[in-house]
Image 1: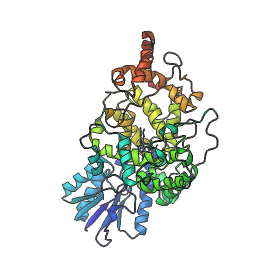
Image 2 (image 1 turned 30 degrees about the vertical axis):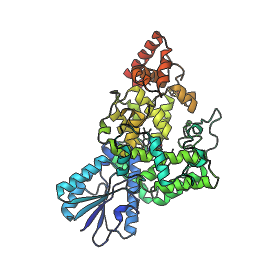
Image 3 (image 1 turned 90 degrees about the vertical axis):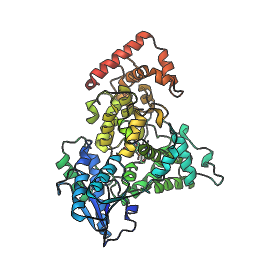
Image 4 (image 1 turned 180 degrees about the horizontal axis):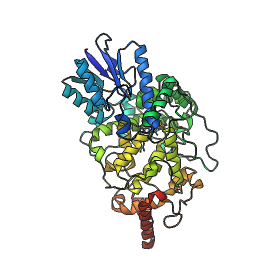
Length: 511
Ligand SMILES: Cc1cc2nc3c(=O)[nH]c(=O)nc-3n(C[C@H](O)[C@H](O)[C@H](O)COP(=O)(O)OP(=O)(O)OC[C@H]3O[C@@H](n4cnc5c(N)ncnc54)[C@H](O)[C@@H]3O)c2cc1C
Ligand code: SF4
């Protein structure tokens, strides 16, 4: 055998550079389902199901193209990890080279390199052209800088790839950023009738996967019974077309809004398809920009959407490789609290958390503001150890892969890497949740109460956080207002907040 082409579970693209020069007479593709990928963090049933189903559909597509494939199915081999499975294959087939597109995850890239080294087989890694900025390009962008600013990177990407740029090299619509138009809430009347996103009913392959997930991971959290995520490129293209036609026009305006029992609102729901590589980010932004050109979607929605993809998504991937493996250990605020157990069950009285966690465990999805300003915000202000929060986020979302999850969780949400690539901690109290959602209407707590009976845990923890990190927050122009507002409280009030927060930390199960 010449090349053993290793395809990982999030590398499911037929146009991957892994297949450039593939010769069916001398090369073989290798894919493996292993328990460890569902157990190194306790992956929910929904997350495991989407990966296994997408992998099996991709295997079918490879076979249909006549590409020789070794596909190790869960339960049909004795290997617990990618390392042990690959070591066995290398010992039996002795290929000249293991060929692979660089892994998304640091851990897996290290593991595969180690196996190849130990087996005496050379490893050829190819750049992942799915991303618009290569690791080397980002390293050059980051060189010599202590801090990175997403906005600078985003503008560089817009100019380099000529996205929403006019002939004079100026941003279309006259400005780079329409963020201030993109912070709308629904108001008392709520979102009204929402366009339902497409639903992809499980086919025979997915049904088999769902049964297997129940059999092998029956004790894992969450449910996959409502599984309807896209698992093939064809389905992902339908999801993309549906989004740009029915939801993109309101994406910007309501990007930050939340509403009880409405998990999807105007979001794209395309992250799992992009992260599995069923969709290319270029085609996603091209589809969005085309809607603006025909006048079907306003510039603020389209710019806001483009920013998430060629800005935040590419930036986070660059940051991940820039900061690994240190990012795994980052804990700048020295937070050590345990993650409350109800993150895994959703059984909590706080309605905002109940909503965000409940839909997460049911659907494998929550939108960015739910992740950042509800579950993430609480973990930050409660003082949870970053490693535990990271394990949760990596376990529960259908789009969860470490290169994007870790910098978002540890860097952006928990401020655990300091101000290295975000400008401030994203902490807020109940007033923010009340402004952006109707969650507080159905809650036993009062968002405006800061201590004592009926106090809102979001609000209590927010003020307690500001008090505990007062020095750091007053030195940052973006957070100095937080400490100024705290400064207006009497000593008695501060003490009452401290006592209520200590009580809540001692009994998180009662929240
Ligand atoms: C604590 C935390 C953990 C997160 N973990 C993940 C994760 O594991 N996987 C993941 O793909 N995203 C993650 N995100 C980013 C973001 O929340 C999701 O990408 C988004 O909610 C996916 O839903 P959507 O496709 O409907 O996104 P939309 O709201 O429609 O946004 C469009 C696209 O922009 C990209 N995007 C938006 N925000 C970000 C961001 N901050 N970083 C990177 N890409 C972004 C996504 O690809 C997304 O599909 C996380 C954010 C936070 C705060
Ligand atoms: S009152 Fe507080 S805990 Fe309840 S939903 Fe509002 S912010 Fe969340």
